Image (cartoon, rainbow over all chains, first blue to last red; front, side):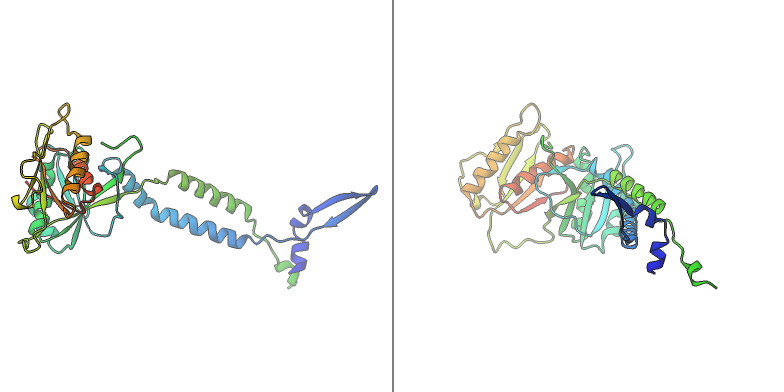
Length: 155
Length: 147
């Protein structure tokens, strides 16, 4: 093993010369950088970031439009109901599946809590069917997706 | 076969270069915004009146004014007081609402529940902001009423 290091290209790079009282002394440093652990860590980081990429994309799209509040709580795992578009192009999605207004109730009936994701400028009457359906389904806990206030104030 | 000839080295430098470039790109494109939630506790079914705790309702009007009422008149700390809030330039008077809710909390410290009643065309952001002000002033159970 030692022979392998000494015979490698590193051997030439890992030597340096020092001047000692006019005489040139050559010292050879034999070292081995263990790159395996570094590559392991890098690979894990790359894999993690690649897996998280779709989630980051979703967050980017959502954070641009959801309302802001002064104090946030952590978003818990729950059935996601999303409202997209304005009054003319309104669409409701339950877990990314498009549903009609009349179908919201049957799609959320088995849920214990809901996450409502909607644009901050949407009128309340477009959001009301979801809240009504949640009340009819007996869902007590609603989570309204939001971002924290910016420094200048979110309102 | 000569044992020495089996010793070979993979050049790891290009691999580390590629991985570093990948990590740099991914870290730069990551979105660091925190998406959280504003939790709302809705009342479902018949509400028990046994506890007799005060509940306030905040009715949002289309002109930006707000009317705050006690659900039961007996819970009202000051029967003669008017808890309505006028708008400022057609919008909700946020500072006034904050002050009013703070006063309400001082007058009735047991006040823990508020229900927001938005109008048809109330902006979602405004509805959440009203609830946020109640929550900020110590009213922990804030609900929202459908139309």
